[in-house]
Image (cartoon, rainbow, N blue to C red):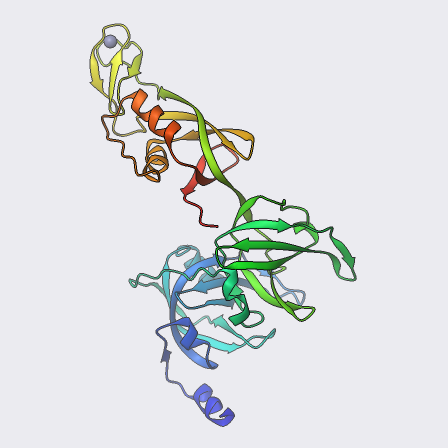
Length: 339
Ligand SMILES: [Zn+2]
């Protein structure tokens, strides 16, 4: 078996793989692989003074970490972030840690956009036992069940947080600066890749030390308490008076009472929402597409001719939903939560 592997390494033929799972079955000097470029670091300097970059390629089956040394390749990859790419003539070699494989981007590797639509794999905690140690995992939304005190160990501080998702429960081990960031009872959207690790004989997950944990709080069971709708700086086209909103697309001037279409080039309306989640209130800004998705989750429908009262009513009556938002009070994502 070993000798057959070796002879394949030494041949010049390009091995083309349909999935990353097939690709990581054995090392090869020249592989053609496809995936979504799901992560990419800037240029870094190793302890030996070598420059390198790292990234992650993901498809429907696996996540594969890659490393490269050529600045021009990093520039090419920077133009492909979050899209499907084909790497032609890259090397697949045994990882220095664990039993998995790493991919090496050579200076002769050609990088191109792939027309193939790829839906990157999202794991859940129910799959943890089937995964190999050091394998990379992407989780969707998780709930934090337990946050014990961080412990001081020889390499720093460590905290074993217990999380759950739609598939089950598991341990998320956090190191040093990542400790004490997650709170019991809260939901989070984890943005970083996690590595499967065995601690004390048990499989758990931990963010790769080089990247740390990246996450956003996810508000779950959100209800709307108050809605304030305003027209975004619309000026009357005849008298330059102030235009009030009559429906999502129609406004009326407060001076000459002319009805007019609201500009299609910009967001016709801006909505301030007072939302409530677990007894805490938040003020958020929402755009019309976001309002629609909140309302759509409740099997309601909102037409473009909906009036202010209809918009506000649909929001106030919407069934509880979940969302993530950015620091500037802008909603990032709205969805139903299935945990
Ligand atoms: Zn007017």
